[in-house]
Image 1 (cartoon, rainbow, N blue to C red):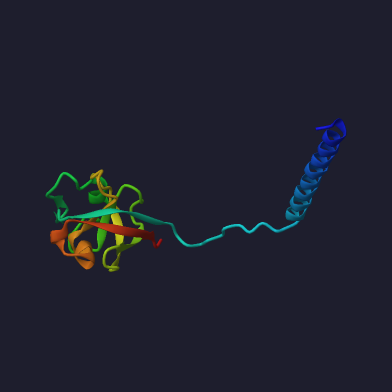
Image 2 (cartoon, one colour):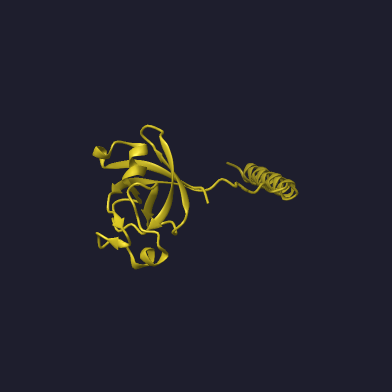
Amino acid sequence: MSKEVKYILLIMISFIIIGVSFTLLLILLAMENQPVELNRSTDPPIIFGYASWYDYDCLYGECKTKYCSLDRKIEGKCYSQQNLTCASRDFPRETILMITNTANGKQVTCRVNDYVENPDVIIDLSSKTFKALAPLSIGIINVEIEIIN
């Protein structure tokens, strides 16, 4: 290849690079004036995990299990399997949650009133809460948890 052809190719490649650079610059300048759309979703976060159930009862302020914490006795809000309650390590006490069984779509609203000690589940439900979602004989279910308040 002759020197003249090499110079012509070099000049053409330079013009192509300059043209692409200029085009990219124009695109960036045009984007700079565009409003940025922020994700301002007010939807509460949804958490997925396993839920189990437990049936410890606290009667007359005397707890039949070591899992009933002193704080709950002082507050006078002992756990009862007949209430729509749950225990969670991810949500503070008194949080209202909407629990959905992902297998059948059944939903129930319950209140967090204790801390879950089981590392295999995201939430422990009272037997009444679990029965609203699935038969107790299943034991553990996949759930979707949404914070109501």
